[in-house]
Image (tube, rainbow, N blue to C red; front, side, top):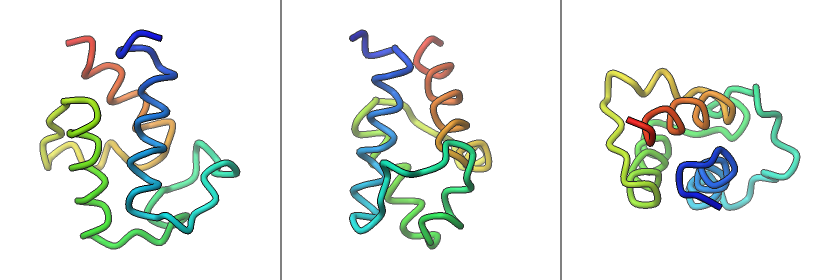
Length: 85
């Protein structure tokens, strides 16, 4: 699987979420659910999530784009597009 493939990006997002919300049942996560609400992420959890994404994918997410990482689906779309740039 290519590191730019949607599946690889999705798995990196799930792994990053698991690192900040280890108790979450990510297998049943609705791809359109708001992550902060669904997983009860506070601002530090979210920042750690973004850092984990950067480590896994090498993508720097500027603070102005944090609002684009609201759902699993939105994260995958944003990060897949960013990998192609």
